[in-house]
Length: 302
Image (cartoon, rainbow, N blue to C red):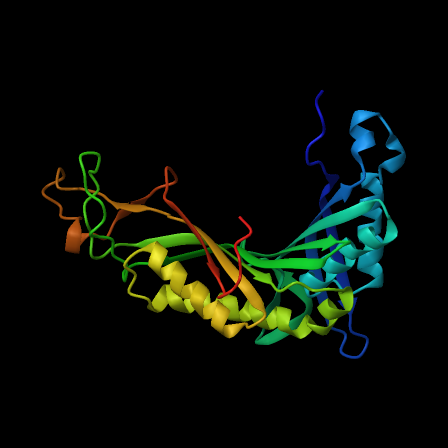
């Protein structure tokens, strides 16, 4: 007899935009998010017995998200995701776990004639600030914050040599190469037992995001990189040192390759090694390097 394994359902791609109008200064602050809500609990009968009586409609999840965005702050996203997740586990007794993912899209205030404009913004990149909050009725709130889509490149200061070299290897060693990646960096916070603990930690969420971003960029630029693996580990170590309430840091860094082009076929034109100036950017296949750095005493969840 088959049985239902893990199951959850919800509403994805809920687009939310909120504007705060400062009545004193006349300045506007805007936040645009994409939200996903997923619910778990005593919902087996909806799958196995066509019992819709246990289903909170996904449209209700969308409307709830809009209402909570009106009634509560949406920044920092760690707080808003926690508010939404906790709402569902508090409101519906048969829902035991609510996972809320928030992607915050960039809107940067324009500077016009040397002055920040009160209500005009530009999207200056595809980088997003991501948050996942999981409310478990029996435990509390688990939060993971992240930087995603941060594209970086440096034209020197990276090497790769002394790797395994066997009969399957044609890659040549290099002591100087272009290093480029699209940063996905996440950090998991200690467990919050209640929503009030999240509210009390609000200031720290922005501070941690700024520190993680600064550490990532500074280490990427300054490190004489022996490998992506070693550079990302250095980044994670520093974030753990900088934010004591973070328990783990994870990175996922795909290589964005730039290959030298041999142009000697054209009149002996030199464009490799020390003479390389023109490169061919590659899309795929690409290296993908991932790791999680844990604070002492913290067990991996994988």
